Length: 77
Image (cartoon, rainbow, N blue to C red; front, side, top):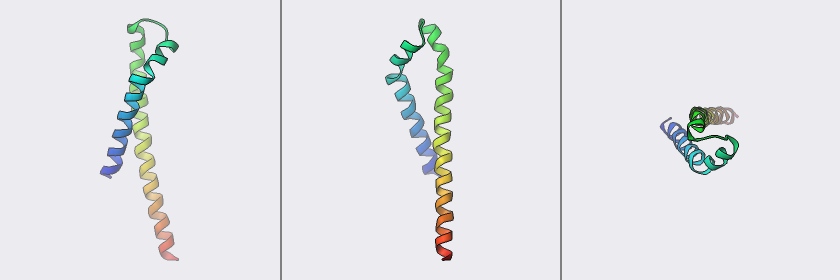
């Protein structure tokens, strides 16, 4: 379980770095305005980072459970 949570945290950090340093110049072209106006989108980035981490964690848990079910079915045969 700790490995799954660590995988989600690492995914969130990578997503944050990509958003802030790689996608930020592209975002400035899309969202016109000064730094104050663009700062309102920081909450959107935070929500996206949280959702990204949750998706990684939930997918890892589901895959782990499916592997356990597959092993149980193969064991019965």
